[in-house]
Amino acid sequence: MLFISGDLGAGKTTLVRGLLRGLGHPGRAKSPTYALVEPYSFPSLDLYHFDFYRFKDRSEWLSSGFREHFNAQSLCVVEWPEKVGDRLAPPDLHIRLDFDGDARSASLEARSGAGEAWLSSLRFP
Image (tube, rainbow, N blue to C red; front, top):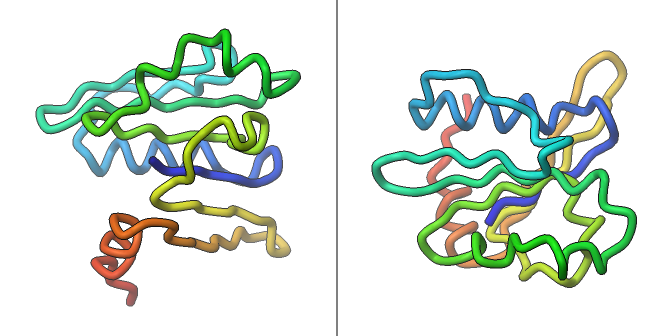
């Protein structure tokens, strides 16, 4: 599971679009702001892109019906995870996007062994 946090316009959905392109998604990647979830199927996994910005309180998670998507066979990418709070398990990786003048900055925090392994596999120039 991947959490992405940041203010409005920080680039959360843009980051997910880049991830989808990197996985080989050929089509348009829509923002799930109104639908709350956009599903994508790949040969090796199902990816669910969630946006909980419109949740008014944490109890909406209980009635959403999304719990079934959070399993070992799926990659769930969650924008605005703070809107659900502790109703979700901790993510493997939490990315925080912030404004840094005219640019953006990102902080990545692994919160599981899988997240640690993923971060250690990254190569930065």
